[in-house]
Length: 93
Image 1 (cartoon, rainbow, N blue to C red):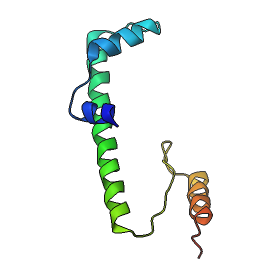
Image 2: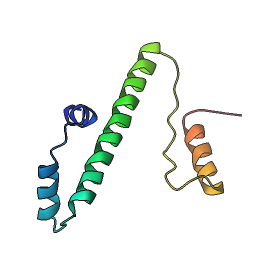
Image 3: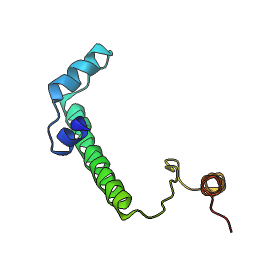
């Protein structure tokens, strides 16, 4: 959680990221590394917002449902996945 907070505040050690990637055999141009760091910050901001929203929902003490991320878009198979997730959590029609 601490690293998410730091990244969401824009505190990402680009040289540490570059060194880690180099250790893995990846040598990126500076502009690519900068873009990767920017994406890291943007992702951390979204994760922090999600964590705050979850905390607020938990405080409301209302029923909630969890649905999977649909990273590949929505097709018929994805709709079945959503239906299964809802059914598994007790949703009935």
